[in-house]
Length: 63
Image 1 (tube, rainbow, N blue to C red):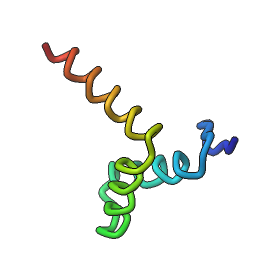
Image 2 (cartoon, rainbow, N blue to C red; image 1 turned 120 degrees about the horizontal axis):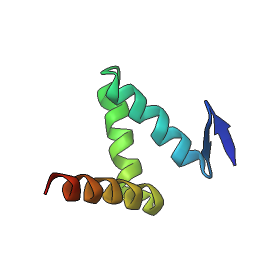
Image 3 (cartoon, one colour; image 1 turned 90 degrees about the horizontal axis):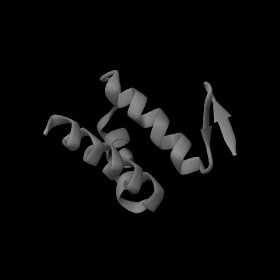
């Protein structure tokens, strides 16, 4: 388990996803980093499931 900035990550992919999401949110991510972020979401079942839960939760709040 890796810990960074108060966040705990069980895999290196989760840590990298977190770093790339921060860059994306701040508007600092390059095209290469956005492509890497997309690949992580598409290829890591834990990350993909987490994103889908967040999207599902946001949709329920809007209804």
